[in-house]
Image (cartoon, rainbow, N blue to C red; front, side, top):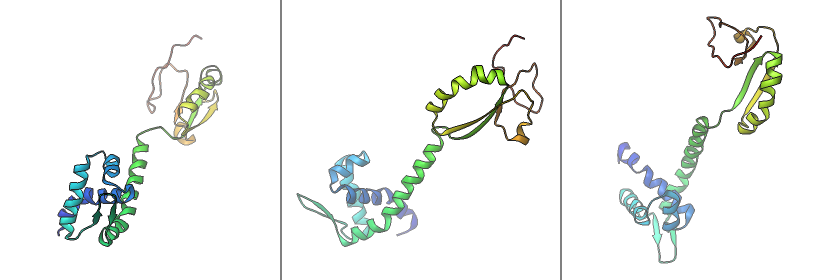
Length: 169
Protein backbone atom coordinates (compact mmCIF):
# COMPACT_ATOMS: atom_id res chain seq x y z
CA UNK A 1 0.00 0.00 0.00
CA UNK A 2 1.46 3.36 -0.97
CA UNK A 3 1.86 6.36 1.34
CA UNK A 4 -1.10 8.24 -0.15
CA UNK A 5 -3.45 5.31 0.52
CA UNK A 6 -2.21 5.02 4.10
CA UNK A 7 -2.76 8.74 4.68
CA UNK A 8 -6.34 8.37 3.48
CA UNK A 9 -6.84 5.81 6.27
CA UNK A 10 -5.65 8.07 9.13
CA UNK A 11 -9.21 9.05 10.12
CA UNK A 12 -10.11 5.34 10.12
CA UNK A 13 -7.10 4.46 12.28
CA UNK A 14 -8.02 7.28 14.65
CA UNK A 15 -11.56 5.88 14.79
CA UNK A 16 -10.13 2.50 15.81
CA UNK A 17 -8.15 4.10 18.66
CA UNK A 18 -11.29 5.91 19.83
CA UNK A 19 -13.27 2.66 19.59
CA UNK A 20 -10.66 0.89 21.71
CA UNK A 21 -10.92 3.59 24.39
CA UNK A 22 -14.72 3.92 24.25
CA UNK A 23 -15.50 0.20 24.24
CA UNK A 24 -18.50 0.43 21.92
CA UNK A 25 -19.38 1.68 18.47
CA UNK A 26 -22.10 3.92 19.89
CA UNK A 27 -19.80 5.62 22.42
CA UNK A 28 -16.98 5.97 19.88
CA UNK A 29 -19.33 7.48 17.30
CA UNK A 30 -20.60 9.98 19.87
CA UNK A 31 -17.04 11.01 20.79
CA UNK A 32 -16.20 11.56 17.13
CA UNK A 33 -19.47 13.28 16.31
CA UNK A 34 -20.41 10.79 13.60
CA UNK A 35 -23.20 8.24 13.22
CA UNK A 36 -22.84 4.68 14.46
CA UNK A 37 -23.18 3.52 10.83
CA UNK A 38 -20.33 5.81 9.71
CA UNK A 39 -18.19 4.52 12.58
CA UNK A 40 -18.89 0.92 11.61
CA UNK A 41 -18.11 1.68 7.96
CA UNK A 42 -14.76 3.27 8.86
CA UNK A 43 -13.72 0.16 10.78
CA UNK A 44 -14.91 -2.13 7.96
CA UNK A 45 -12.94 -0.07 5.41
CA UNK A 46 -9.86 -0.20 7.63
CA UNK A 47 -10.16 -3.98 8.04
CA UNK A 48 -10.51 -4.37 4.27
CA UNK A 49 -7.40 -2.24 3.66
CA UNK A 50 -5.42 -4.11 6.34
CA UNK A 51 -6.55 -7.50 5.07
CA UNK A 52 -7.19 -8.79 8.59
CA UNK A 53 -9.98 -8.45 11.15
CA UNK A 54 -9.20 -5.71 13.68
CA UNK A 55 -12.32 -5.99 15.83
CA UNK A 56 -14.36 -8.90 17.21
CA UNK A 57 -17.99 -7.90 17.39
CA UNK A 58 -20.59 -9.65 19.49
CA UNK A 59 -24.03 -8.47 20.49
CA UNK A 60 -22.67 -7.53 23.91
CA UNK A 61 -19.13 -6.33 23.32
CA UNK A 62 -16.47 -5.09 20.97
CA UNK A 63 -12.93 -6.38 21.41
CA UNK A 64 -9.81 -5.75 19.42
CA UNK A 65 -8.07 -8.65 17.72
CA UNK A 66 -4.32 -9.00 18.19
CA UNK A 67 -3.83 -7.10 14.92
CA UNK A 68 -6.24 -4.38 16.05
CA UNK A 69 -4.50 -4.07 19.42
CA UNK A 70 -1.10 -3.85 17.71
CA UNK A 71 -2.36 -1.05 15.44
CA UNK A 72 -3.92 0.85 18.35
CA UNK A 73 -0.83 0.44 20.55
CA UNK A 74 1.44 1.75 17.81
CA UNK A 75 -0.71 4.77 16.90
CA UNK A 76 -2.43 5.88 20.13
CA UNK A 77 0.48 8.02 21.35
CA UNK A 78 0.76 9.74 17.97
CA UNK A 79 -2.92 10.74 18.01
CA UNK A 80 -2.67 11.92 21.63
CA UNK A 81 0.40 13.97 20.73
CA UNK A 82 -1.38 15.53 17.76
CA UNK A 83 -4.30 16.44 20.03
CA UNK A 84 -1.99 18.04 22.59
CA UNK A 85 -0.09 20.02 19.97
CA UNK A 86 -3.32 21.19 18.37
CA UNK A 87 -4.58 22.37 21.77
CA UNK A 88 -1.36 24.37 22.25
CA UNK A 89 -1.72 25.98 18.82
CA UNK A 90 -5.36 26.76 19.52
CA UNK A 91 -4.34 28.38 22.82
CA UNK A 92 -2.00 30.72 20.96
CA UNK A 93 -4.97 32.25 19.18
CA UNK A 94 -6.96 32.55 22.36
CA UNK A 95 -6.27 34.38 25.56
CA UNK A 96 -3.38 36.86 25.64
CA UNK A 97 -0.44 35.86 27.83
CA UNK A 98 2.99 37.03 28.82
CA UNK A 99 4.70 40.03 30.36
CA UNK A 100 3.56 43.50 29.27
CA UNK A 101 5.99 46.28 30.23
CA UNK A 102 4.20 49.64 30.41
CA UNK A 103 5.45 53.10 31.31
CA UNK A 104 3.17 56.06 32.04
CA UNK A 105 3.33 59.45 33.75
CA UNK A 106 2.93 59.26 37.53
CA UNK A 107 -0.36 61.18 37.80
CA UNK A 108 -2.01 59.46 34.84
CA UNK A 109 -0.89 56.07 36.06
CA UNK A 110 -2.19 56.55 39.59
CA UNK A 111 -5.50 58.10 38.54
CA UNK A 112 -6.38 56.13 35.40
CA UNK A 113 -4.26 53.01 34.91
CA UNK A 114 -3.75 51.54 38.39
CA UNK A 115 -7.50 51.48 39.21
CA UNK A 116 -8.14 49.48 36.00
CA UNK A 117 -5.45 46.84 36.61
CA UNK A 118 -7.33 44.44 38.94
CA UNK A 119 -10.21 44.05 36.50
CA UNK A 120 -7.85 43.70 33.51
CA UNK A 121 -5.75 41.06 35.27
CA UNK A 122 -8.87 39.16 36.34
CA UNK A 123 -10.09 39.08 32.72
CA UNK A 124 -6.63 38.14 31.38
CA UNK A 125 -4.97 35.86 33.96
CA UNK A 126 -2.19 34.90 31.55
CA UNK A 127 -0.89 38.48 31.41
CA UNK A 128 1.57 39.96 33.89
CA UNK A 129 2.01 43.72 33.90
CA UNK A 130 5.15 45.54 34.88
CA UNK A 131 4.12 49.18 35.31
CA UNK A 132 6.71 51.94 35.52
CA UNK A 133 5.24 55.25 36.67
CA UNK A 134 7.69 57.95 35.77
CA UNK A 135 7.58 61.41 34.23
CA UNK A 136 10.95 60.79 32.61
CA UNK A 137 11.08 60.06 28.86
CA UNK A 138 12.20 56.51 28.20
CA UNK A 139 13.90 54.89 25.27
CA UNK A 140 11.31 52.21 24.55
CA UNK A 141 13.62 49.85 22.74
CA UNK A 142 16.65 50.25 25.00
CA UNK A 143 14.63 49.81 28.18
CA UNK A 144 12.40 47.06 26.80
CA UNK A 145 8.97 48.69 27.19
CA UNK A 146 6.09 47.34 25.14
CA UNK A 147 3.90 50.39 25.66
CA UNK A 148 4.52 53.98 26.70
CA UNK A 149 1.74 56.41 27.54
CA UNK A 150 2.83 60.03 27.39
CA UNK A 151 1.45 63.56 27.18
CA UNK A 152 2.52 65.00 23.82
CA UNK A 153 1.26 67.15 21.01
CA UNK A 154 3.20 65.17 18.40
CA UNK A 155 4.85 61.77 18.58
CA UNK A 156 8.45 61.14 17.57
CA UNK A 157 8.67 59.76 14.02
CA UNK A 158 10.27 56.60 15.39
CA UNK A 159 7.11 55.72 17.36
CA UNK A 160 3.59 54.63 16.52
CA UNK A 161 1.12 56.80 18.43
CA UNK A 162 -2.62 57.05 19.05
CA UNK A 163 -4.54 59.80 20.71
CA UNK A 164 -6.12 58.40 23.86
CA UNK A 165 -7.83 61.47 25.26
CA UNK A 166 -7.77 65.24 25.56
CA UNK A 167 -6.07 66.76 28.59
CA UNK A 168 -6.18 70.11 30.31
CA UNK A 169 -3.01 71.89 31.37
